[in-house]
Image: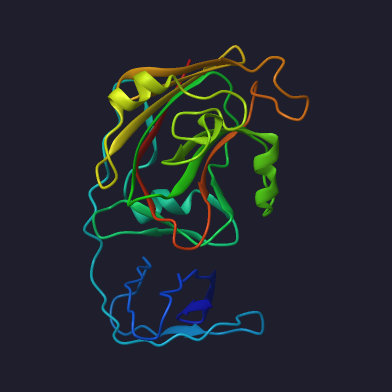
Length: 254
């Protein structure tokens, strides 16, 4: 659906299906409004093929205080809508802001990337899944230019509770599984937050889960289609119904 505020087209909004007409869900959009009266319009276009019922609309001021980076880091997503707006979404689906200043994946298969090329760096972020959900952190990502297929030219640090070892949490997806014993010792269960620290240096990637090294992989001869020497970082929204939350995304150049 399209969102318009005071005559300005703000583009498409992604509303996740609830499955049945009897099931309701919340959807959050953060907007810059003028003092006084505003006109907010949500409309369905020719390409929108689903039905939506609205029950109520509530407007309140943003309550998110920007998160502070660790020493030597800078924030890429600090919990505010302003920082989220700096990212670029290659649809379908998307990431929506939550009341607790996190973002949650909806729909898919899509890709949210930060529009800056990084070489050697440390990337930190927190993530949480609700159950048997699926997402991932992409590194060495080229500019998707609106097409999530760009993920096939990047490496993915997987977030997935159940799959073969090369495709579960901590794996360099389809290339090298995590140290399962270390991973299982460090991993918090669904519903609790986990922290990734991903170190990219000299074509090598190290993955720390909650402070424990669980993967160490040299990508130099991994694939002719992938290049870790430079690229964006990104988050994956895998499919409708897969709920993965992220917060406090920060990076340090090495």
